Image (cartoon, rainbow, N blue to C red; front, side, top):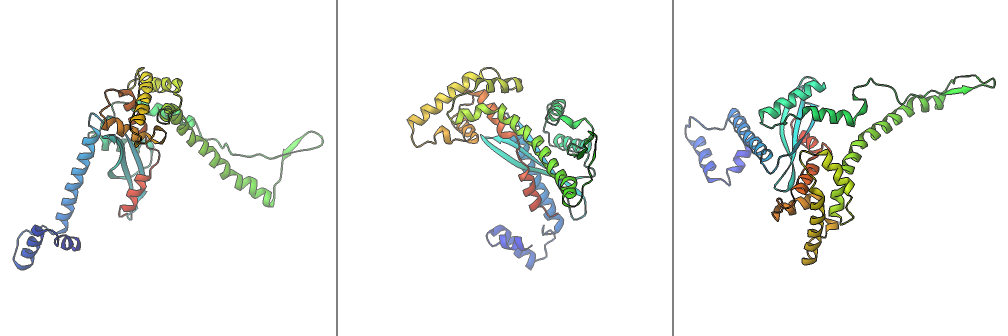
Length: 310
């Protein structure tokens, strides 16, 4: 109510309505809590519809999802879903919805996410099996049983050639049996997590070479063509050389423009859209969209948790 009274100072219509509510008997004031909640729900629905329309736009085509969860005050886990996509040449991350969940199992999370995407008419284009195989490829032991890779066995060799398990005490016992284990676990997990990033960097290596005005690696281009064969064709090689010449010519004609060495991938995509070059460089545009659509971190989900009254 305090917010409404503040806004009515700048809105003559709202000011007149509040004055009538105070001085006259008005049957419908539209100031009750249920009305507030209904208005918020309607506005939220319009925002969700606009996000879905942007994703389903023919110019967008690709999107990714970011999910995270945390318990609220009633100890119910709330799953947040954020979508990332490129719209009008700019990468966007948009909060889509909160979702209460009862289990953290992969099957439950997958079914809930699939249901939400279906309700918002966001198609997965029957690529579930492809995503599952990619996930298994990134994490090799996803189908194998857990083994303690960080287990340390300390042996003591005797003069007769035999050996036995050493008896550790004090600082040595704590260092080997306690301290080293989380260290080993951390190192192993970091190596596992950095591997997908290295694969992505290798796959899109040609983009950095393109915008940094360095020699183009055709092997990198052939790699991404083979990986995204349904979206990118062999013409990408010629497009890269042509676009590199275009950037060089643009720089020579206008010295005030950012040099290619200072341009980021998002700036290049925006340049292509603003100069209406999508038809001239369709494969480069697709490559940039795929690269910029990939979520690198879940910061947007964390920010929504901060603003959500848990």
